[in-house]
Picture 1 (spheres, rainbow, N blue to C red):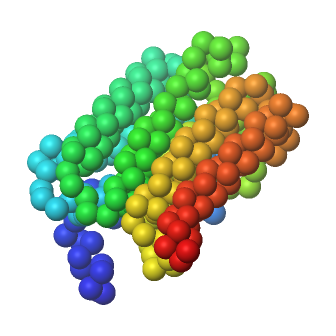
Picture 2: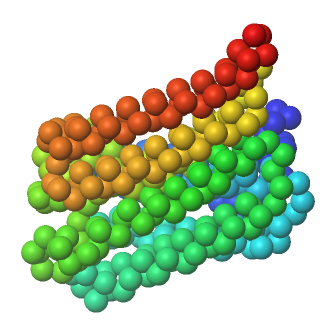
Length: 309
């Protein structure tokens, strides 16, 4: 075991045990995808547990890493992390249990038992959301030496909550597909289980609310990775304050992107086939982001030019 791996093993213990469990489950589900021929809503029946397990590996590992950066121990944050583990275990147990039964886990109320299980899933996710929020507050109340890192962690924690909220439209009455016992859907304008993008399964014929949900959730990894890259490759050219401002721009743009993707899905548009209005909105976001980045960099160079003069 490498030195880095040994250090990681001593991060938040419940989260790291959970990450190990989800890594094993991902392998089991991958084998299931290959060996189990059952298809459910147009996809291999083990694909959902595989995707959720991989996502939870990333989620748990990132939270444990963030907690390891705190200058002093936070009992509130550690408690919240443990609650997250408990609720996530319940969520995954229900998903895998439904796969074993050959049933869908989401939006399924076709029998009393299926309805109860889906309600339990919803309750566990609500508790996870609250625990994530509490953990975020506890983390951000502490001093984190590097301002860019603090911005990355803050935006990542906040936008991942936005990603969770982006899933709410899936269970609104407007998303009921008119099928007896089914109380929601991922797709908008078409039935779930139709043609989709490889691996992700996002609809290519209608809107798909999983896209904004996915993008928002993974801000938790994307923004800290951006902060690390800025420090690694531009740390000598951009000081801490400039990198922090760039992270603010990136976080704001990422949040708007998440909202735009959800808005696009709610209007029944496939990701790769936006209408003119959607295309203009995305173009405006890109222009605004590039402009903001340019202004941050120019502001950094102006004092240098004044000193040179």
